[in-house]
Image (cartoon, rainbow, N blue to C red; front, side, top):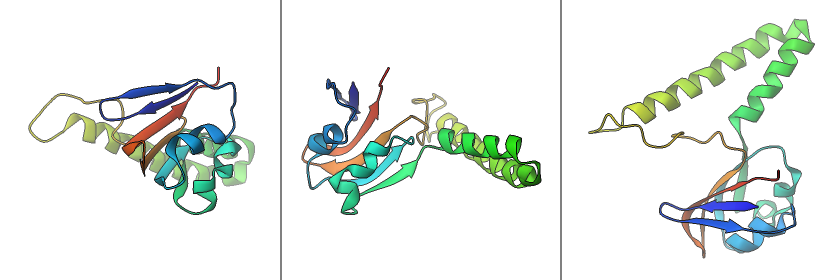
Length: 138
């Protein structure tokens, strides 16, 4: 199941496929933007990615795991890995501050000011502007 999120709409795309064809066909050939992804290789096969219209950005939660693994596995690299983990922690702190300090309100809106979900894309496409997509393959 693929989930496409808009500002006021949620679309569930049911497909037995994990393939790149699902998001590629939904957004269409003119879609452009930044796709935040986990390490699922199917995103690299999207025609919009290959042509440079959509740029892949790795999810910070997944990137963070790499630095944890390096720090635990190679003692000589632990200080380097910890320095990156501190930077990533600061990104999460900034995210919390942005959510808690919206102008004119003390209310928290949403979970993330920037995404840490498995896959999210903000694109301009015939399906609509600034859509977000995530996937769940349980």
